[in-house]
Each structure stands twice: as C-alpha cells, then as structure tokens.
Length: 124
Image 1 (cartoon, helix red, strand yellow):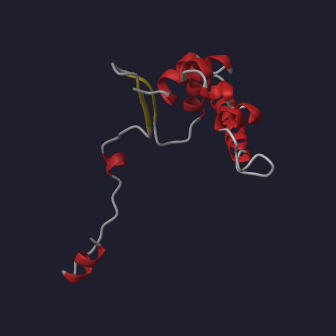
Image 2 (image 1 turned 90 degrees about the vertical axis):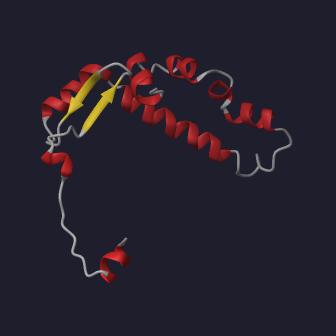
C-alpha cells in the first residue's frame, strides 16, 4: 500500500475514526451485552469499574502465567533436558496441575475469579 501511495503520488491523512465515532477504548462483551465499557481517557472511574468487576484477578492471573511459563522453560534446561519421558518431566517441573485439568478448573483452583476467567481469559 505504501508503494502504491508513492507511485500514484497520494498523500496520507491521520484520522482517529474511533474517536470521531466516540467508540469505547475497551468493551467487554459477554455474548449478550457489554458488561464493561471504558473510554479513551485514562480515568480513575474506569479503573474503579475494572477493580470492582474483577478485583485482583488480573494481577493473580499475570503471576500465575509467569510462574507457569517459567516452569515450562525449565523443561529445556539441564539436567531436565533432554527428556526421557514428557509425562515425567511435566510432573517434575510442576506443570501437571496445569495440564491435567480444564482451563476452568485450573483457574478456579488458583483463585482466579469466575467473571474474569469467563469474560477475559476464556471469552467466547
């Protein structure tokens, strides 16, 4: 597109269509309705709505993800790698709890709120 613009001597124009149409910066849809809408301004009210709806679930989810990624990466370090058995390796690094259950069960077992798990992580 850039090459065509140059070839035909066209100019660009910056426009923020979302702002012109007053569209939300973030909208969370539960399949039937928007359960949360935030605007482009970084307001304390939007942060309060997120905190009210999801509590500290985003923070705990991030910590859980970092922990599990660390465990996964440890599978590729000495003395674990190379593996003799993938199943034994997954168990030895502590990932069996994450791989042996559904996502819903795993999140619930780790204290991730149902609303955050359903609306954000496993959104449909």
